[in-house]
Amino acid sequence: IDGGIVIMSREKIADFNANCAKVMLIGPDPAKPYSGGVAFHMKVLSDLDALKDAAIYDPGSMKQMFSFDTLKIIFRCIRLGSKSRSFDHIFINSSIYPSAFIKLLLIIAGLPSTCKSRIRIFFHGGRFSNIPFLKNRWAAGVARTVLKKVDSVHFLSKEQGTGFEEVFP
Image 1: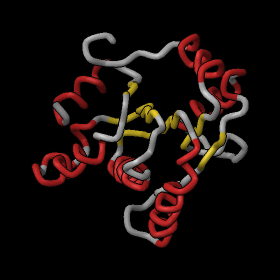
Image 2: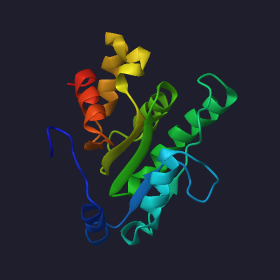
Image 3: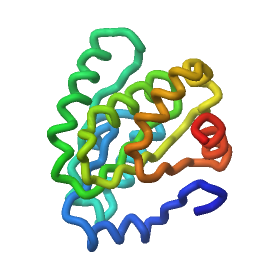
Image 4: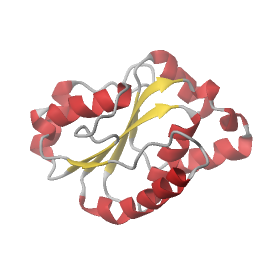
């Protein structure tokens, strides 16, 4: 841990192969033609020997906050709960933008409270200070409650980690 921010090396990820039976990666499916940082990271993770047998769950893209696609994503997140019970580790890959953060909260909320999986979030582009609803104490409190299910968070930069710690002390 570096200043409260968890840093995970390739070697640490490789340890999962020897120590756990099943890993689920949540994010854009590397087999589909997505672009961007989260999609690239999913491709890198899925190409690692240690994660070659990991299950991939793609909840879909939320390009617009309120659309039919949003409803489909909500139902996919609810279905994820039943699929996640048999995994030792769940790696969730998300951007730090309003719609992506809402989708992340839906994913985590969809996981059963009895989930024995270790849940890790990998955050990519964006800043927590640019998510308007997190400035509201009630909304930030709801997010804080949902995030209690998470075992560790990982950031691309210390600035993102500091931003997270400011919103979620």
